[in-house]
Amino acid sequence: MPKPLDRPGPANRRVVALAYDGLCTFEFGVAVELFGLPRPEMGPDWYAFATAAVEPGPLRGLGGVQVVADGGLELVEQAGTIIAPGWRGADRPVPRPLIEALRAAHAKGARVMSICSGVFVLAAAGLLAGRRATTHWRHVDTLRALHPDIEVLPDVLYVDEGDVMTSAGSAAGLDLGLHLVRRDFGPEAANTVARRLVIPPHRDGGQAQFIQRPVPTAHEASRLSPILDRLRADLAREHTVKTLADAAGMSPRTFLRRFEAATGTTPARWLLAERLARARDLLETTPAGVEQIAQAVGFGAAALRHHFRKTLATTPQGYRARFGDQRDLGVTRNPP
View 1 (cartoon, rainbow, N blue to C red):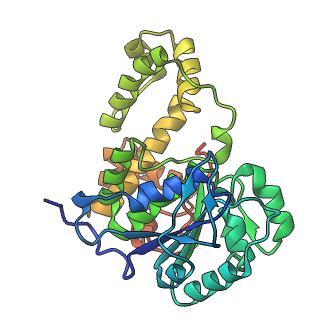
View 2: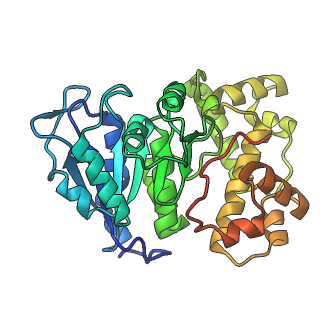
View 3: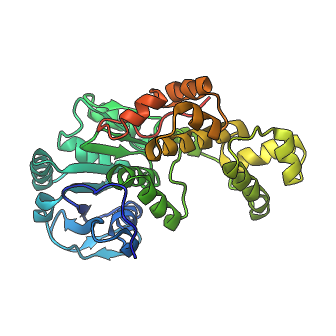
C-alpha cells in the first residue's frame, strides 16, 4: 500500500519533456526516469508524464533511437512543469513556436527546467533574463557571451529560481530532479526515488570536483564502501584518519590517497557534506532544536551555524523557515 507523501505536491502534476530531432538521449532519459517511471509506491498523486514533440517528422535521438511523442506543443500548454532535456547545439536556433509555447505556459504558471545545454532553450525564450542559471562547464562561456543578461553560476550543480530551474552537466539533472521531488513531496519521497536510482539524495559540491576524477578499482571500492556506511551511520562520533585507515586496513597516507580517488574529496570534506545533508533532513522533517540537531550530526551549535552560513548562505533556523523558498540556490560550492 502506498505510504502518504509528506506534501500534497503541485496543483498541476503534469510534467512534459520536450523531444526534438537530434534529441540528447541521456538527458531525456533522466527526465523519464525521474518523472515518467511508474511509481505505485507513491500513490495516485504522483506526477503525470508526457513527451511533447517540438517539431513534426521523425525525432531521432543520439545513439540511433527514435522517439514517438505523446503529442505536440499543445501538451506544453497543459503542463505544470516543462523539461528541456539538453539542446542540439548552442548555435542551433530554437523554433519560434516552441519559444511562444514556453512563454505562454510560463505566463500561466508552469515551471520550466533545463538539463545541461537545455539552458539555451530557456534563454532563447527569455525566461532567464535577469536571473541566475547554470549549465555544463563547457557551455558556461558561450552562455555568458550569447546572453549577458543572465547571471551564470559556473560552480554549482543546479539553480532553483522557483518557476525556472537549471542544472549543470547531464547527471546534474538527477540532482535537480530530486531537489524538485523534495520540494514538491518532501524529503522522504526524494529519498525513496534516490534509493531506487541508487544515487545519494544530496550531492553537495561544485562541478569542478567531477572533472577528470579517476575511477576507483572494484577492490578499492569494496574496501571503502563499509567505511562510508560506518561514517553515515554514526555522524555524531569523532572520526580520525587513523581510525578510518585502521578500519580499512591501510596506512593513513594510502587511505587518504585512495579515499580521494574514490570520492573526489578528502574524508573531512566528505564527512562535512554528509553532516550538513543530515542536518538539512532533520531541520525539514523534525521539530528538534538546533542544539539537538548539531549534537546528532557531530557539531556544536556554533559550528553548525558557521557551516550553514559558509556552505548554504543561511542559518539553520533560516533554512528551516525558508525550505520552501521559491528562489533557493540548490547545491553550493565545495565546503572548506
